Length: 356
Image (tube, rainbow, N blue to C red; front, side):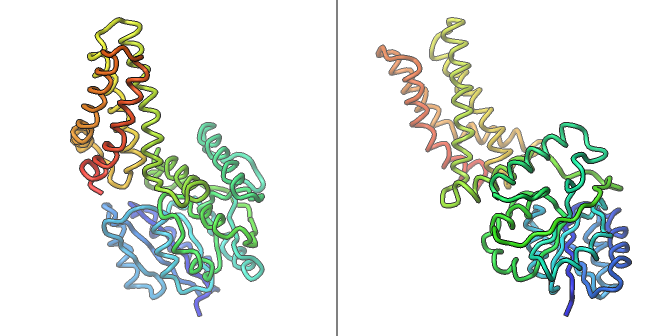
């Protein structure tokens, strides 16, 4: 039986792939192991190189994913394919200290999960600016709050666990984002955990995949797996962004109508459109991130978003204008108009703009 399956999720890591596979083969030479490369159809030739390597080495395998992206879902697929008694995940960028793997293996018979921790013996990471370090520490503290246990690095991307754990919880894992370890810990609150310190290295080739979407995915994970597991998370996201749009709507309306003395209808048009643009930006980045528009498609998406919201906006405008003309307060008129339009806008945009 294979002792260890190492999962390497990749996207545009052609330069790093030969380095990490060669190093893994050297470090694990005395252990029965396999290397599973899960590639999201990289444009730089990563999957082609991985395929060539799999033909030369019996213990290297490739999963090439078409029309599927995301580190967590890639790791889950690799875990489910692994034949090893133990499963491990490492990044392709060489930032994890692979020399720790044999020591992790030594601890596995006595623990369910062994984590490579960046913070066990230190509080800073060389090469990180203070904002990235502050954000990482804040996210770690927030994660520990929901875990209700002391783990120094619950967001680590370098860990090992027993195969049976994954097969028990795989159907319930959150498939988005970058933080699969946190989800596993949430699903296995009684797991026996061992942490081992390692020095987080610098990326050798390529660029980091971190962007604002990672932040949203982390928030999604905490919301969906702790607060609202039985609710429509997407509608909650849409509502949260809608609430921010309401604040923008009122701010613009107050400025134009109350402070500057514009006609109410004209002020309302500007307030509605400003809020719509803000809502589109954040819904595209968070609520409908899987179908989000990039580059030139972003402007087409904005046009479609405005089109989908046009009926809701007309209801909003008509109700608000009518109620103000009848002597009702401008803020009450706006609330009623927003209330009527929000449900239409959500379903229209889901179907028409982002085509779910």
